Length: 576
Image: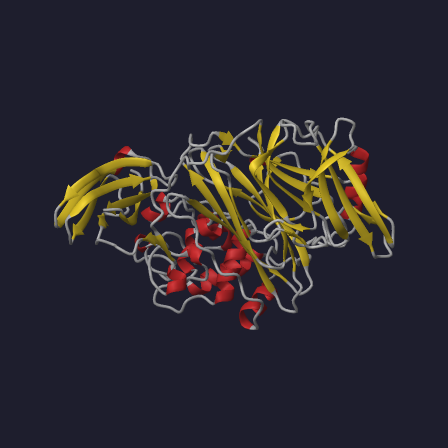
């Protein structure tokens, strides 16, 4: 696509795209400051005589004392929390202290103390939400970044129910990313981006990506910043800027137009480097006559590094050269040169004027070979629907892979793809490329590995914590950190926790056991210490010491297996 067409298309987009509604000059921080200074005077939002910050200070002094500052609480400090971490509500200790279970990912651990304010009523939900939204939008000191009236109406008058938080990956199997909530007024269509620093110190092998979002969502796209580029982008939610939507700083990973779980084929994984930053892209249209809270939960499933034999890669192929005459039907055809790949998935994307989308192998003379993606075919249920659903296009998964090095194209090797999209412009306007549903797109997405690859039949890695079950304190009316536990807890305890050096791990066996294993693992699922290895043990109490001074500070899992039944507890190393 030439730069001329790109510039022309984006210029048309800029003149017509409806981003978030403009805001007034009222500073959101001043609203937050009023909430804190009114409700947290004295010891209301800090513990006893150890005053972490002074809420009676001036607005500018309190802002300086909160933004990016380390908390005194050892457990929060060990996790890397700040009092306020711009763009990251779940990493902002002050918010988690006052959140009062407004959201499961804002729960407190026992070692982090009680909910605040102490001895006073909890903050109103709309006040908690205002603080969260301010942090989510980057926690600036000036400017109104939150529509307070919309939040107040949602929590006092009502709105569309939030989606329920899904179960996150188990302790050794990955982690969960939460985007939102973002509040959309009736009839509002907006698209947001968020830079999300993973804050992991080691390489990751990602073997699954599962998304949950509102039914009204148009799409969620996951990209990853290229090395050295994330620092050029702000923290927090930002509305769509069409000039940077396809910026070269980011590589495409995967896209969703429905809630879907993509577990990668055995032997493959995305490989993410330490300190990686994700780019989260959420597009929503609120069809309701009530305010809608849009949210995305992304479950990232991992395995120990070095397990995968092949790296999974992704491609987003787009045609910007779209000009649809008023009241006309038209089919656009484009070609690419994707070769030497083994294809795992193919799917498509248009807006509301799209009526079909097909992908074919490309012959050496650029003609169409056999079809490999049919936009009207339901691949999950195995039948042709007879029409293309632009809001929920199908995804085809090839297992075994579609090998573009083999003679699978009528006896010849393909030289790429030919992709075709058909449109019916029922409007009286010229329709061009654009980001709203009133404009159009022509995109296909592909997941692949380089070269040829036969998927191994036997798994290359088996989860050691598959017996865990999830307990969410905010949904089960319990206290303490969101835990993974097993239904056969044998009374394991850890003290002190958090600790800077030695932790005493104790448990009691009510029956003789043939195989007892006690391990400490990091959040990547890697065993950092084996205290008991498949021993026979008799009825009684046992105690072991784990020297945390030999390991990096952070969150670890103590895993006890008794004849195959597993109990787990979190251990926090707070450093020296």
